[in-house]
Length: 309
Image (tube, rainbow, N blue to C red; front, side, top):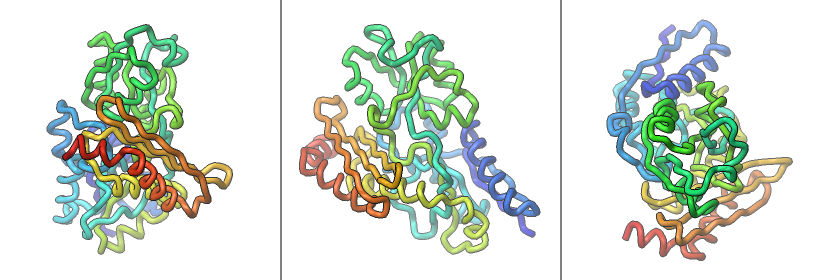
C-alpha cells in the first residue's frame, strides 16, 4: 500500500501536530505507512517580522509552500494550526478533518509564584506579536507596556528571560502540546480575552479530488469542533479586514446551548466593539452572521475603513 506523506512546517509545535495526526491515522489503519516531510514556508522565513493580530485572513504565508507541494503531489496531506489557514481555500484543496479542539485560551507565561495577571507589577512589560492580544491586554490594564515578540513557542519563552519581561502571552494549546504548562502562571478565559479565530484547533488539508486520503482522515473530524470553527471562520470571512485589524471570535457549545462572542477594535484600542449571541448549536452560522451585522452597525465599518481605506 502506498504510504501517506504529511507536509509539515519544521517547528517543534508543527511536528508535534503532524505526529499527532499521523498517530490518529495509524490507530485506525495500523498497516498504513505515514511519513512526514518538512517544508519551509514563507512565514518561517520571515519569522522575525511582526505579522499583526488577525488570524485567518492574510495568513497564507504559513501554508503557501505546503499547498504547492500538495498540488505537485509531493505530499498527500498537510497539518496546520487552523488559525493560520485563510478563510477561503482554492477549489483544489479542502479541510478534510478538524479534530477535537484543544484549549482555546490565551495563557500568561510568567514567574510561577504569580497567581493572576492582576498580580503583575505596575507598568508590567509583556511580550506578544498579536494586535488582538495587545489591545485586550491594554483593556485589562492601561499601565501594561507591550513589546513585540516573534519566534516559535520555545523562543518566546526564552526571550521573556533574556529581555527581562514580566510575562509573555501565548496560546494555551501550543504550550500544552509541547509539555510546557509548567511555565504558565495563569490563563485568560475567553470571556476576558476573546481568542483568535480557530485557536486551539488543527486542520487536515488534502486535495479535494483525492478520495483515498480524504477517507483515511475522515474519522479524525469532530463535528462539534467543525461547527464552532466554521462559524468563527464565517465571521472572519464576512468581516474581511487584514492582518492589521485586532479581531477575535469564539464559538462554543455548552449544555446544549451555543454561544458566539466576537471582538473588533482599532489598533490603538480607542474603539472596541464586542458582542455575544446565544442560541441553538445548529444556528451557529446564523449567530455568526448576526454578530457581523451587530459589529458593522456599531462602528466596525468605520474602524475597518480607517485601517484599510
